[in-house]
Length: 311
Length: 295
Image 1: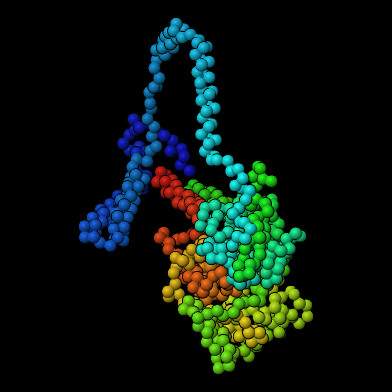
Image 2: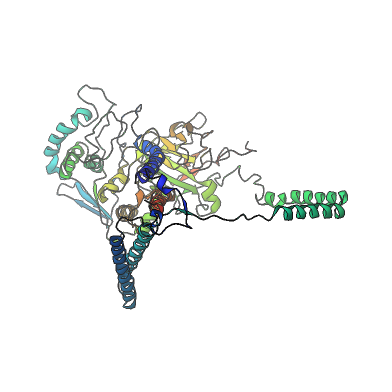
């Protein structure tokens, strides 16, 4: 930027032919011109080659190479032409004033004020009626907004499809047998018949974990809920309802992938880290006479995130 | 030219500022406060297979089916395995492999007896054992200190103390159904390892490792034995299903199709858009500056 003074814009008219502003930016224009000419020749050959390749149905990479090369060489030549061979300038061109003469503008303003004073009157009744219409319209416009929220959920959020005696099945509908899971295993289960339904996959999904071979009690009052070390928790995070499917068998925690809420599997899925406000509801299980895992009853509380009427 | 350099410096500084938190996040996997890692519990299952081969003494030496064959390590390796165990493992796991080291304090290190050859083989052959830092919360995969045959020898000796299953698997990927494997991977593995198999952070400074460079038999070993925090998948996945998952991991995850040539780790559209904006638009802007620049 040391040559800043030289680059002050000059008026194009009246410059002599050998003014420095009119010279090309390049110090050796003849050589630059040869290079640009070479670029254009190569570019022309390439695009002609592209045409030939297209004509003979050559391999796609030859089409790409010739077209790309042609555009590249032509573009380099064009940019170099503009950058190194054009007069280096910079120039300014004066522009005449665009506004109308002052007397014309004054006359127009005067005529508008005069005519307006003659013609326009206040009409408060019409203004009031229009205001009323627009006000009611703005209220009515809210109706489709409210309806778009869908029907009221009523009691559907309070209960899942787990019932007394529901078989736990995996996503393929296979009933889980007490011998299926080794200690440290996990599988996502549904009450039989809902595994392929939207509602089943949304609200009934439950993680089934085997943590030991013995009956396991997570909390007081849940002595019979964990037969043969099988524990079942709702898979819906109590924070925002993400699937809590990340089971770490050594730490004995379930982790939610969305906000890292961490639930302790051994004490009834009490949250020990993260934003989840409540434990994951535990499903009471039993092993029936044939060895299948079934639920003693539904969940004793609503699953998933909190909502206004949650009891 | 100096102004170009200046612009480049500003752009790259902005890029580094934006990338910095990502780098910090990726590097933050080293805190402590929990017990040292343990291996899986016992109860590794019994062979329930179409093919069961026994030696002259009636001991099962291999079992499985057309999808996966499980082979017991040869008992001829026992003495070599014992020597290697005493050199490399006994200082923590004890000379009886029961987790009681020389100072007699039990509970600090895992009992290896009865875990099955596949468990021992996985930990040694993946380079996790012997551990670089026995007190660290996790033993990450690294270049193995012992050769594959030495790992099998150690597995043979530990197994000779209390023969158990699963044995060391050899998957047969010829007839595998990769599409089924992808669906099973999404159901059972993607929650922790991510759908691209890159792995992710988990609770309490642990993480699910990347699956990009794991031999097929180690994928089977991990699924069947559940190393460290990974759940174990036994009765709920058949050998055929495990074989399909392994086929998916060793093809689509380890050799993904990258039509653009550079997958950026498969981190998803946000990361890719970020790179496209910063690098692509940045380079275009620099070219634009250069075209308009008058000397």
